[in-house]
Image 1 (tube, rainbow over the protein chains, first blue to last red):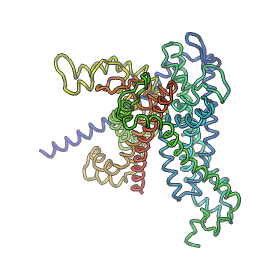
Image 2 (image 1 turned 120 degrees about the horizontal axis):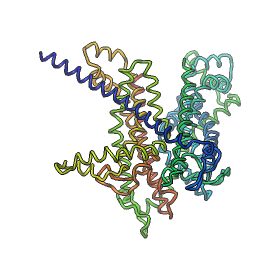
Image 3 (image 1 turned 45 degrees about the vertical axis):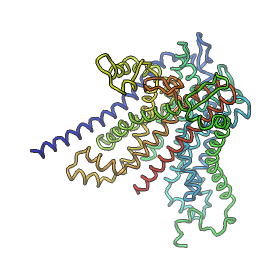
Image 4 (image 1 turned 30 degrees about the vertical axis):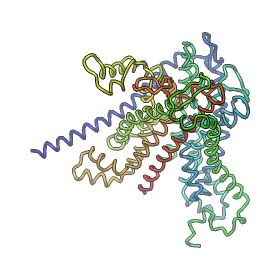
Length: 281
Length: 330
């Protein structure tokens, strides 16, 4: 009899734990749904043409987010243009020339740490490096801070994707007398193209929502400006400023901006994943 | 030559470096320089932070770490990092206490219970949580979560541990009112949501490295699903699970925007976790552009240096644990 009671108790405990496990998954999904639901509900209310055509307004008047959207797009683009080529080259070193070298191990390790390093510290670094030497905040400093955040993401994916390219391909190329660099450029890169693109897209998604590294590099700007040598507005920083303000129309614009950022970031990352998923089949 | 056959693709069998074609020398140099640049960036961050914080560290000495006073307005201004350091550690630890069980629950569900066709969409949905920018968590936490906590959860716990019928010693201080809505606990809750996807996706990966034979053997002996997880899966993947938790801790320590919105930005160490507080990153985000005077700026950079060193150690430990796991898996 004691045996049956024990068996029942063990089975009951297992049932309870599995129930909790299912509940955790449901909880995670519910939280996601609530966050996206709130964003849609609050963000759509302020969505109109003016958001994309007008500048950020002074409190109490109508306006849009055009200068912030422009600033974000420009700084993200420059960040990628600077960061991606360097990262792809560094990833190439890790996967091709330096694969088993000591240096590659060290770089891999440091890169993985940079991947999760606090982005606000990168902002401080660029502040010390550029803002204090130039004497003022600037769009280019913001872009540079973002480019540093690009590096660990793209280095990691480039290396991973190049290593998925089978060594037999490399050996086949070598056996017909192809020079090493030609093999990398024409064979390895071509085979890993989709994967590397995914890495770059994920980096775009990551940096376009970053706020902390821009706070004291690009600062902010209430007006239309295309001058990269001057403070530049960005969507995340405007959201930060407007959401914490006491003005209702500013808060509404913050929600609309939040919706725009989230939609673009999530679309990008889903698209990036689909690229590699298709490839895997 | 036949032994080094596998090496031909790596070019190691060429007799002399000078015999390498120009294209190879160029590409090798470029990729090498880029890889070294990654190290230079890290070194540059360290050096510039040390340089920037030198004034504050030499002015206050070790008391910078232990002093709770943060008074930019006094003459001379006094800065001590104890309150932000305490807030950073406390919010991260509470966030882990909440997120680790739930994250493990999700990965157990995905690896052991969920039908395969459903596992992928659910995993992607959970990972979307990691893709949402932190400022979105901030605005959501401030306008949605904080008011809910203020109306329902916080008054309830305050009453539970401290009312006219009974007092729970210790806990009545830990959960003392008034219910502000924002504060240390709210920040920790937001952090917990943000690190949840990291914990669940990394532990899911390590759970999948457990050889099916081991689990089948345990089931064959009559173990329940929970016993298989508790006695086989988790012991087998312990290093990986700890690595995942450390990785999440590293994220939580450095998280800035979400915390800045909801922590209340008070430079004091309160006994109650419902009270407003501050963290290192929130202090920097809030005060850096408004800091007047070299000493103020330098003190904020010193905070950044402390944060960078702490997260560096935690993340390095996480990578080391996960690396050990990978090796063991082979």
